[in-house]
Amino acid sequence: MEEIALTPVSYLVLGEVARHGSATPYDLKVSVAQSVGNFWSFPHAQLYKEPPRLAAAGLLREEREETGRRRRTFRITDDGRRALAAWLAAGDSGRTELRDPGLLKLAFSDLGQPGDAVRLARGQAVAHRAQLEVYRQLAALPADAMPWSLRRTLELGLGYERIAAEFWERLAADPGLIRAAAPPPDPADA
Image (cartoon, rainbow, N blue to C red):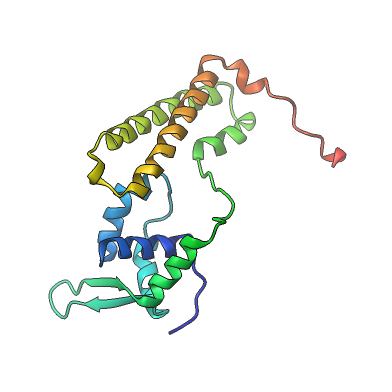
């Protein structure tokens, strides 16, 4: 077994395997798309790379089919459960990441063409309203359709999408708001 640094994707894989008992990388991809993939984005190729890495560290156990597709199935080990439990018990989850490409574009919109920011605001408003509807449909599912922890996460997702949609709708309705912010601080004042 090798000592490795665990990343958020490591804990995502450990959590999904622990929740389902076992999983192939494809199972992980499907499960994540239906749960945390709604609010936490990352390259899905990591779901194929991370399980073997965790198995090499003794946190997962790998079973491979001898014939056919030679599918690899992973199960969490006692060490993996301890690592997951320690992570869950830690009070600090680190700095919040908000990786929204729309906000990134807005941050640089002053470098674009006139009208780009308004088109961006309109498109983002539509996208956030659409995601809000997806979350509303998930929230309407029976209580036993998802673990309570995902339902609590969904509550925050509903609130975030509502606030984001309203933010972008305000910008789209009043383009003057986009450029009305105070000028950036002068670097010489730092």
